[in-house]
Image (cartoon, rainbow, N blue to C red; front, side, top):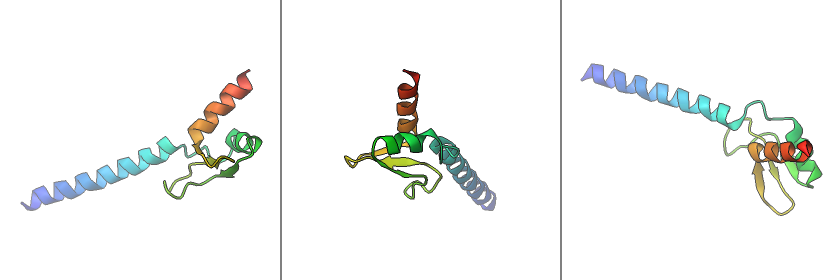
Length: 84
């Protein structure tokens, strides 16, 4: 019984570690500053380099219309805008 409890605790710890790590990677830890800020400000929005609801360095933009655009959306807008 003691051995099963240890394995379960280790599993929970690893699960937490993996989910938090991939959460940061998925959020885009390197996307705090970059072209996203420029795109957001060009749209007349307010740029936030940190998302407190995620608890990670995940930039987002609050547009004039009240929409919250995440880093991936801003990156997509930047790519489609600058590629043309």
